[in-house]
Length: 217
Image 1 (tube, helix red, strand yellow):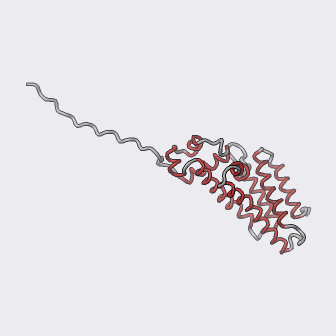
Image 2 (cartoon, rainbow, N blue to C red; image 1 turned 180 degrees about the horizontal axis):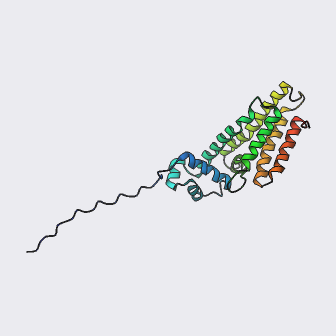
Image 3 (tube, one colour; image 1 turned 90 degrees about the horizontal axis):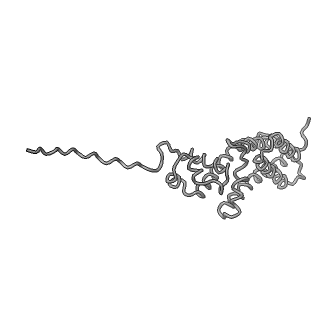
């Protein structure tokens, strides 16, 4: 008599591998890495593969959390602006003299612009966002506001200096603010070109002497 073979229970099908966000995914940390990647390479030269690798996430996670490359760029730039506002805030302490304020602004700027794992990166606004502003109608006003914010902050401080007697009443506050802001932008460009810090500090010192008068020896 032939015995029937017992049927063994079929093994349950393997669960499909889940795609998407890794368990350790942290949007805030990933956005920081995206910001640094854009600052290093610019918008056009930075690919989605570059961003995905730098952020440590795959493309579905990138799209699902941040949108497309342009959306990610805008979010990264927004983050940069917030970080810079916080970074420069101590320089506008009203307890500082005008010279101390300018010295602090330019020192902070050089610390930011000369930093970077792959070399000095300059300023996100000056070196990266402005190149996109030419063709992108949404980025353009963001860049214009960013460039104007430094000048407006300096103008307010210079006006206060006129009222307190730190600056003579005959100075043109707006022109001085333009000079002060233009120096920040010049430092960003020259930092990216790897001009030595000592040379950049000399430029900043010259601007401060022009605005405040020669420093007493």
